[in-house]
Image (tube, rainbow, N blue to C red; front, top):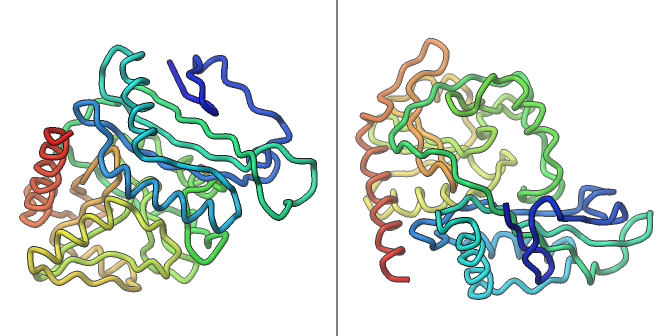
Length: 283
């Protein structure tokens, strides 16, 4: 497996970082995950913009050029047999003495990982469960995809497989939050509902896409604080992330939903796939 680190292509098993990297010592690092379609990354600009916000807030100084990254992504795919890939762009603070930060981290460690994509069956239904682990609060005002991932790992240990199930977090106050690796949506009486960012969830790139497209369709989108019974009473439930796209949920406990037959889920996912295909043709 190939990766790219600080300007060089490297075999994955040859990657090395210093134990003095503050991404290791203090968990100060951020990442984005995405995939390619027909060799091209989808919504890469949006992923990079979210990453830049995190890096700026924590004073990690690095240049992230979308065109250069796209070329690196294409080369990693080429070196891996030409197939589409799953990517993680990771920026950690870089090497510094033990002890908290300088005023600016000027030499971060940048790694672009690639691995083979798991099989994608569009419309494959999952079940969901309420997690015992509660969603922790973000490290700053806004949640980013950071190295502070122990809360998600602890929740993952509750499930035998993420391929068949998704775990749904509640906040400490008992409000619906997000999935272990996804954002949550549900449909009730023609309206689309999703937890508000004030619950401390990640501002997902695919989440933003769904909200935008639903508005364009004239669908009323409500972002708010919801107790679990509101979701359990839904007609449709689906989750989103950048690799799995839009995934229908068929069952949560004793509650059953429309799954892949949900009308709004179907419409939104068809639009998502259409945009993927158009973007791939334009490149």
